[in-house]
Amino acid sequence: MIDLYADIRFQLKTDVFAYSDIVEVTVGDYLIRVIAKEAGMRGLACVTTELANEAARRHDAAPTAAAALAQSLTGGALMGALLKVQQRIALKLEGSGPVGKILVESDAYGRLRGYVGNPDLNLPLVNGQPNIGGAVGDIGKLTVVRDLKLKEPVESVVPLQTGTIDADLTFFLNQSEQVLSAVEIGVLTDESGQVTAAAGFLVQALPPYDEKTIQQMIARVQDLPHIEKLLRDGERPEDMLALIFTGVAYEVLEKRELRYECTCSRERSEKALVNLGREGLQNLLDTEGEAVVNCQFCGEQYLFDADDLELILAGMP
Ligand SMILES: [Zn+2]
Image (cartoon, rainbow, N blue to C red; front, side):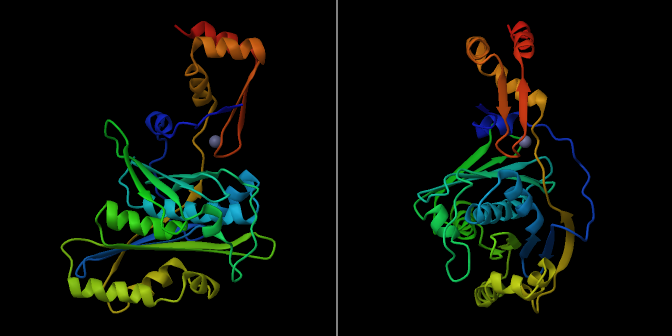
């Protein structure tokens, strides 16, 4: 089988956008964006439970792998909301832990997809929580690739902090991007390992900001109960932002839908085959008699039989 998305750069460069509508929704997964103009802060908060479960289902992921993927997808949703239209972002977590590589992609329209290297991983719970840090490992790197519709994607690499993506994204935004930021992500699972709640928030200073207000906000974020506790108490994204922005005037700018969606297609799979080159494709035809292109993100398989391959070869220079 061929990994359609083995090369993230290739994928980012060749993707095509088909969606421009952002729909107002009140059910399912969503993200809320607020701004506190006077204080010089912005806040994002999202719930991602459904898309996390959709991802787990598609990848047939065991509890710990599903939780790690859920956490990364939530990070992707928050980072995606910082993008402008048509821009895309990919987060690649490569840690020393047994879950392997996690790759998540997100765009400015709230579409997400992701995969995890070892979907079978299941570790014992730690304090009743999935051991995501242990699964990812604290040695390794986080690569952030942004397709800002420039000539080349913009790539940044930071060392992993704890193997939990909220700490890694906080480090990335503060150190690499030099924007005073805090990210928190929580994932709750039941005894069977099903993700019962996944959510996160991101708070960021917008220059020119009021230093005193920002320091108060940072203290408040640090004083907040763990996001897992907020989730258990049934707090919604809007409630989390209200807690964080207590006493600070802010305005809700947007509420947008988030969903798991893959952009793979038969056409793109064909392109992946063409990229093998004439020799590679001929070799595949001679040895296998067919080609199955497997999408890592959604599990979709595209079958090209001998006739299809002959046709592709005939169309190649
Ligand atoms: Zn796909």
